Every structure is written in C-alpha cells, then in structure tokens.
Image 1 (cartoon, helix red, strand yellow):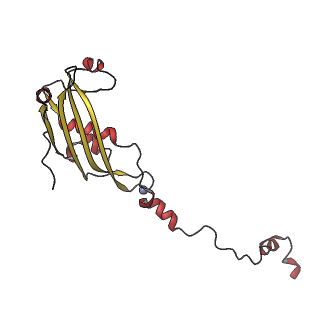
Image 2 (image 1 turned 90 degrees about the horizontal axis):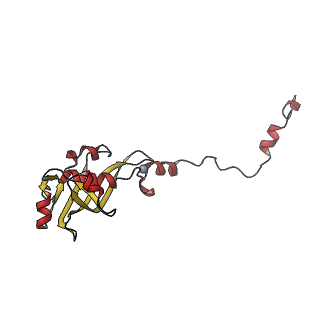
Image 3 (image 1 turned 30 degrees about the horizontal axis):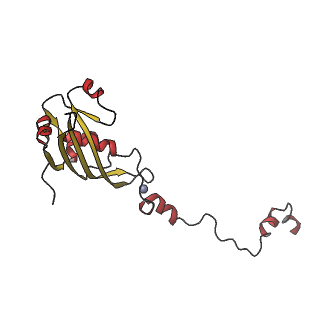
Length: 178
Ligand SMILES: [Zn+2]
C-alpha cells in the first residue's frame, strides 16, 4: 500500500508557525537530478517534514527521508538496491546572506518565495545520501561469484615425479636417442 503523495510545495513559514507535519510519497521520475545518479528509474521514496520554530524564533524543518533506490555496483556493474534513510534539520531562510549567519550546526534551506518546494528538498537530501561508489554485499556481487566459480589456475600436479619437467629441459636429452 503506497502512501498518499507528499505535497509538492507549501507556505513553509506559515507551516513553521503552526508546527505542521506533512508526509507522503515522492515520485522518483519527478526528481531528475537524483535520477541521473541512479541505475534505474525504479524506486520508492517516502518523506516526512516536521515544521517548527527554535528558541531563536528561526523557522525550521526536520526532514526524514526513507527510500529504496537502484544504484550501480562498481565492481560488477550490475544494478543493486540501496536503502537510504536520512534525517536532517534545516533552517528556512530567505537569502544567502541570512544563511551565512546561521550557526554551523544548522544547514540552510533557502526559500525566497512564500512556497517552499518540498520535493526539491527531498531530492537534495537524497543526493547527499547516495554514496559516490556503491558495492554489492560480498555474497551478492556477480563479479565475486564469477571469480569463485572459475577453475583453479593450475591443475593438480601429479606429485610423483617433480623432475620430469627438468629432464625435458636438459639440453640434448632427446638427441642422444639417434
Ligand atoms: Zn556487484
């Protein structure tokens, strides 16, 4: 059962004043910057945004995202599922300048208009969470499994006569037969 879609945008300062909570599903097909980083368009994304104010009267949003996305394993180059879960609190600010005045512990979410684009916020959070390189677990990686399946490089040597090879290398060993 998939949840209702998340609102695409919202008056974020009003939401902060009210302490609103919105949640729902986000379509991967509508997040082109994220889609570019992935192996396929298959995936599920759910997000929850808690709005509020801090003691400095700043408008905040805590965004929790959970997703299952397909990335490319950099060892075998096959697609693999990646589960992502993130939680981040951002201060809603109107300009770069206000953003620079925030304490280092708070990331800015710059919303110049009244409406903040929630799907864009979720997309940004997911882009930060996607690892630059991803690998299958050892047991699932096609390349590693193929390597295990290959026959050993040297066949069992018949240990009876280790000098056989040396004899064949002796100069003139066969010519004496004439
Ligand atoms: Zn792999």
